[in-house]
Length: 268
Length: 148
Image 1 (cartoon, each protein chain N blue to C red):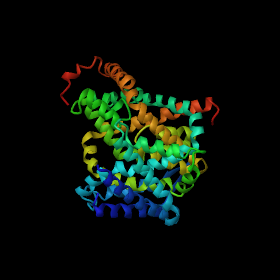
Image 2: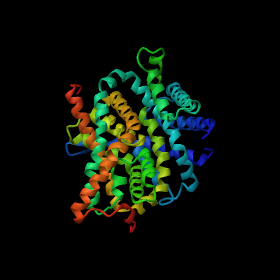
Image 3: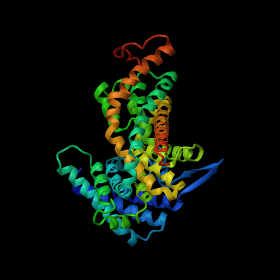
Image 4: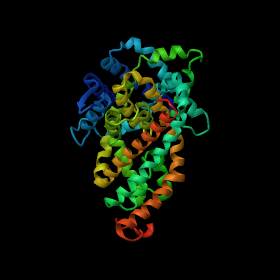
């Protein structure tokens, strides 16, 4: 917290990123939006020891301990977006609730793919959900984090942490430009993962549809809150059991036999 | 983390954000100040409530809920809060977060290398799958209800 160097570096990164501003690039019939927050993240990554080595271990540790607090102002801002639009949010609540079914899309798609590219029980942990904190905690409790399932969920968690915001930001902008999906529907889906994924997704959408900014923000934030509420139960009761079942089926299809008992598959 | 420390970090983030808000969105710092202070206050209330109330509800949930309730049209002061906080651009608040997150990410890059390409493919696939499938459901429901 008292790490002045860290805050000064962040301030400089923010100034540079905001100075660059929102950049959109025409690609085919639509455009892809790059936001200051994405520049900020990329610049910040390049300052770490793996690259330019300007920020050191200490700054990385301190930054890690601060992130949850720095999110709070944004959350307050999200709240102030939800309030004024609350009647419309309530009217759209069936869509907000039902889109949570989308959480079951990944097991159906990701498990066959994961088995196909040669993953074993990692796919159950990593493919059962978008693998944010609650899902990691759940897999940790059920299988242990040093199990294959645990390695899977942690791996996908790390992928989401490192690439999630950038990926969801670009994906939102891509889907808004090239598919008939409505910006409100996309806004709700930005909430399926972490708050920074949502923020990047919403940011891209707002840059493309500035006159819908209020509703887009409110839907994204509301969906993120819903996900926080039901995501865990969705995983416990539906996604995990379904993943186990699909894994067995897919494994048999690929290898011609049922997977060995999980206890004996420690060769990896 | 102690409440006092959290509040100091809130103020640091607010300071960085308000400068970003000026650089990126040309909003005068003095003009954005009341709105920013309101956000700091809302966040502080949430943090304190989460500490004081024994039920295990995350701070974020308190903050979003309180901020939502206080800005529902008709609630006393809602107009004022909305008016002031609208001076603080949402993107300006997000940029510092991702700067901190990016610095922290440096720690995870090695892990990412270790997990191997298969997990990276799986991760991207899971994100795309979750996003697209919930967008399709949301789109169909909104369409069905005649809201889009």
